[in-house]
Amino acid sequence: MNIRLRLTLWYTAILTIILVVFGIIVYFGLSRSLLITLDDHLQREANQIISQLKFERDSDHEDDHPVEMFEQTQAVRAEMEYVPEPGVFWRILTSSGQPFIDPGHFDNASLKNSTLDTDKPSFQYGALADNTPVRLYTLPFVINQQQAGAVQVAESYAELQDIQRRLVILLGLSIPLIILGASAGGWFLANSALAPIDRITRAATQISTQDLSRRLNLKLPNDEVGRLAATFDKMLDRLEAGFEQQKRFIGDASHEMRTPLTILKGDVEVALIRPRSAAEYRETLEMVNHTADRLTGLVEELLLLARADNKQYPLQLEEFDVVELLARDVRHLTPRAESKQITLRLDAPSSLFMTADPDKLARLFTNLIDNAIKYSEPGDSVCVNVTSRSHRVQVAISDTGPGIPPEHLPYLFDRFYRVDKARSRKLASPSEASGLGLGLSIAQWLAQVHQGTIVVDSEVGRGTTFTVSLPLELVADES
Image (cartoon, rainbow, N blue to C red; front, top):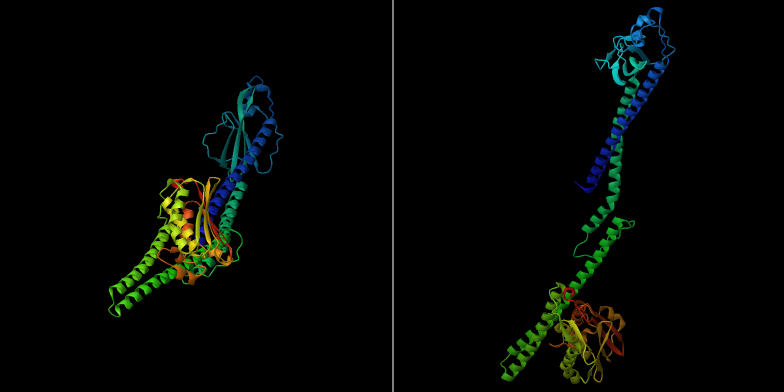
């Protein structure tokens, strides 16, 4: 069962319940109102009859008690000025229930109550001799503070029954028609509301992993469905970017691994062409070892990034002196800088303690310093400057090298991205992970897991500065 059918059925069911309850309330409410109106009219008529009732004694019964006199109908002459409205039937009874004045309306009348109770006012249903259904009102009256008799007034309620029947027919016809029309309207509205969803579904089925460039591009109002379509397109943008990055990553990784493997295979094949001396074999093995080291470094970097993507690289936090850590890195890389006639120096306070993972930060700073040395020319200088401000430490690694063109800066931290690929490949060595285009990606990730940032500022011909900003206090559960 699809959504539009479920929505229509729910809408129809709720509307049916509402209309049925409304019809019941209208039927019983109107019936009650009409009955109250009829009863009020009967009460007024009965009171009017009593107010016009007069008695006169004859000479033979002047000493009789008024009630006894009233019950002896032959001794009383009633003069009635009451003229009933059309359709109103009446009579007067004695306290014993015998007719005293009876125009004959109630001859052979059928009443629901078999025993007439004249002690208190009451309403009941009945029928006249001609089977006219009536509503009967009995109102007792007193003479000299004693129960003397009762007035009975009746009026046909056939008109009330007719109104009830017509109301039942009206409700019985109108409610199903309203439900039918509302159901059709509900189906149309549900179909119209869900039509964009069908368009989204059809467009989504045409999108595959081989072609993520397609977009919905639906011109919809800014409602829930419109925002869904826009969000879907944005999700496709992210997926396409992710797939493209993955494809580039796989292609670059394959290329980088193929290069050392090709060199390795070539060195071995050359060595096997003819017998060689021990020195020649040793030289070949050293080249093989050099290439294997480069391949091992690449695999380790790829493994590190894979663990980072899966968040399987937890931090081991401890308090340490970041100045001392940077001093060790500078001492370790100074021989390499001197071999290229590059000046490497550290400008930092005597000590600065922070809480972080020292091993990972050492790798972060080593990558950046090594990258600065590798792309600097003889006679250039590399400076590592350390400052602290607002509970954060800032490490700026500056060089006076050739700089980076501005069009390359947005992609500098992408994996396998290199400004000068030919130069990078020529300079790459087992110790130069950045030559593979992974060093800056790893450095950025290491900064981010420490809740830090890396900002690069470069100008062609004047050099480049990488500024790392890290919190001095890193809470373990936030890392």
